[in-house]
Length: 147
Ligand SMILES: [Fe+2]
Image 1: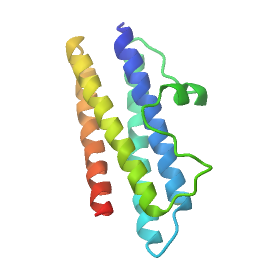
Image 2: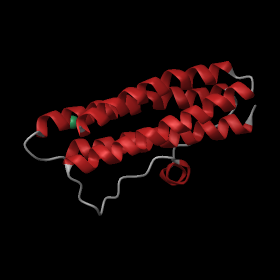
Image 3: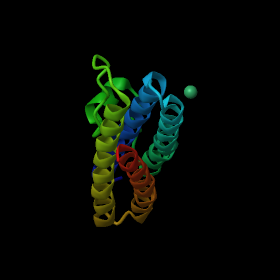
Image 4: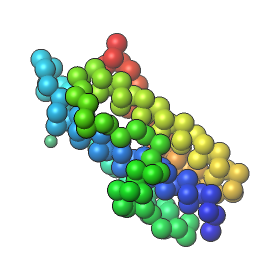
């Protein structure tokens, strides 16, 4: 059991939960002439983040740790910013916020891949190498939408 890898994977898990929650917020509250496009795109953004949650948590079990689940743990360990509910967001601001969080997630995954390689844990490195490509795709979509 490698505490550094477990702690890192829990930060990844917390971050994935936050990306998913933020994307639902955008999906539910976006408005304007391109409503349908944004509404559907943000649901895809949600699905991309949510589809990493279970594998991250189960990887934590495989390496001997306990996956976090409580909102207070998520808030303490996320590397993505939780979308501020007291600030009303236009579609453009949602895209910018989502892009900044995807970029933070990509950096976190790069760190994790290095940590896993140093720890002789190619399974974790491979999981993060797969997931970082999904986040790079989301970041690309968001950048293109911002123009
Ligand atoms: Fe929906």
